[in-house]
Image 1 (cartoon, rainbow, N blue to C red):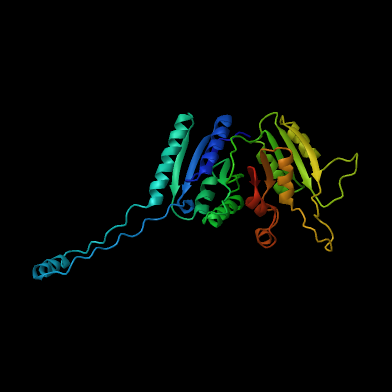
Image 2: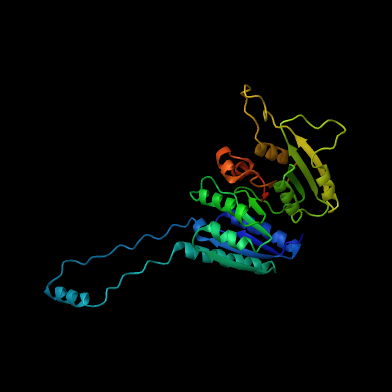
Length: 309
């Protein structure tokens, strides 16, 4: 599947440039256009402080008369200075247009005032891919950014590529790790990943389970999906792993490796440049209570992660 419309979140952070660079790489490969969206609610520029009122020195008789005359005129309330966020969003837009023009690509830029999640969900529905940033835990707006990722994933019907807040990722799709399970979400994510995986690239479909491992000579989970990927010109293979302590009896107190940790560890071992997982396999209410792989990955990701729901 070719990408034709890519939506990317832009802000004043250094990682905004990383997200845009990756969007440019994908746009060149697919002949796609890029829509840059800057949400006011995700900008960290402080609003200007209100201008203090300046009171004159005590008035004489003439001054009192002048003041009485002025009081009969319409009251003029000073307007606040232009918002710093608005100026910052304008600067971001200028940089975006310069970059797009230099790259000879087509693109549009918009700013949005109000809840960022609603803005991204609405625009995502007319895009093939949404590129968002992992929230920086030190950013006071991290909860808003995290909620934006979750809402776009659950409500837009579009795949979401999340880029870590630290590191550089100029390209993805050459060595891909796919978290595989016999679920709708995994199948959807794997299919959406086809647009990001380069022809001839490597893909590993990794199944994580408590054990035991598949008996020797038996077909691994994900083998049929790997053959499907091979027919798309991708060097795909199935694999499986049992994270330490996962599924162990309750009396064993050693820390267990979560599924998210297992995926990230495996991705590091094979030097993957993209991790693909199905998002929110359980209901969102259950994820909020129990955690879950989607939320864990959003917190701990170390490489770009493609999420589909």
